[in-house]
Image (cartoon, rainbow, N blue to C red; front, top):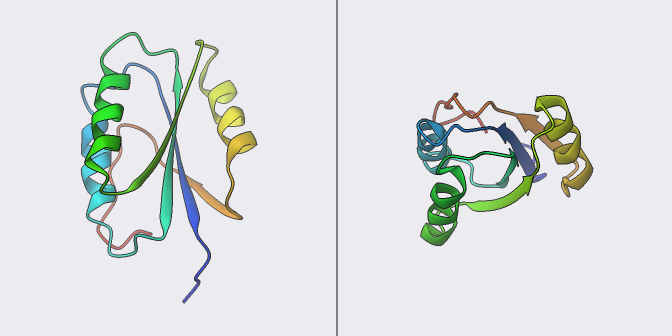
Length: 102
């Protein structure tokens, strides 16, 4: 079994209505050796408030980065630039993972 920590990178834009599904699925992971990096590409909805509430719950490690809207690829590239772990995977903000995905 690999002991390396992994970053789960999620780029998002105005997904406040659905990002909680992904959050809940991450909280249910059997392997908690990960960090969730959210790059918010200029959302104007309640995404930031929701993520701040997730952070306050302190159930999983979350890093949140907000940038002005520039498109998904720019947000993805920013995420890759700031990832601190040797491994990462991308999960879209409207997805969710099975409990043993990590």
